Image (cartoon, rainbow, N blue to C red; front, side, top):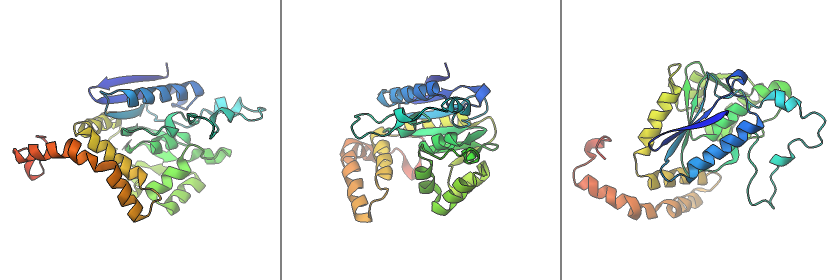
Length: 266
């Protein structure tokens, strides 16, 4: 099996394991990753997921050995086409990249996250990179475009100019640069990305989850909206959580917990 799942309380770690291919994505792995993240979404005991590529590479992109075998087919990507008549959106070329989950996912990145692997990291909510990890649109060399969210998500993270510089040149983006421009949120020593991402996941998982998910949803929902419409969307998504979770939290604060910014006694 190229994909396995390990759980630690409310944190689910989804592991991709094709080390000989530097975790390049083949169809079987893509399907297995979709199933793993759909199971995470459906699990009421799971709050935050970590996505980790085992063996020193997050993901080297689409498996080009598999891609080369598609030569001669009239429409080799037909099964992945968007179809308005379909009730369920087909999986992305890299697997889970079209899933719209209600819970956070954190990428734990060692080594390369390039081409489609870069797009998978961009699909995640947060990215924890090891010092020697790197991003890059390496598929630029082979005439393979970004078709799994890269041209959508990267500009939203780093701005259009920086995104175009990375996309059009295909150059290597080091962990240090990724942190500087906002393409990742944490950089940790080599060998520590999984542990650091899981620690971050546990930190998020201990908060009231209705509020966490509502705020996350509102951040994504505001893209493309004018300010007034975005404020309306935020209210519609989140106001009910004041009653559902916030009043109880305020009561705990009034009883003496969490004073002076203390996060240890919630």
